[in-house]
Image (cartoon, rainbow, N blue to C red):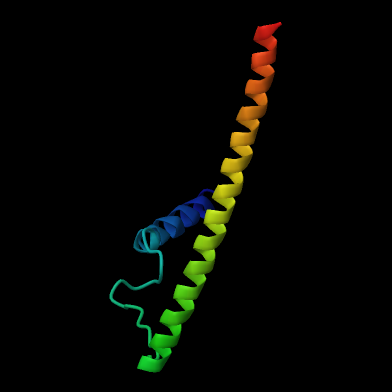
Length: 93
């Protein structure tokens, strides 16, 4: 039994150096290897189409934001008016 435990301890000690090497690595096993990406080149017509689509999406998003803001302001204003009517009636009686 004691010799078996010594074998386990020696095996674990041998694993320590490998664990330290992998300890702070997020993307791979070797620090020298760098991930390279190959993206296709975009043509000017593709870039113009992308620009146009993004402008349209931004306009639609801004229209939605403005419409929602106006609706919320109207609701808030009507709630304030409704509550002030109740407060005025409460104080007048």
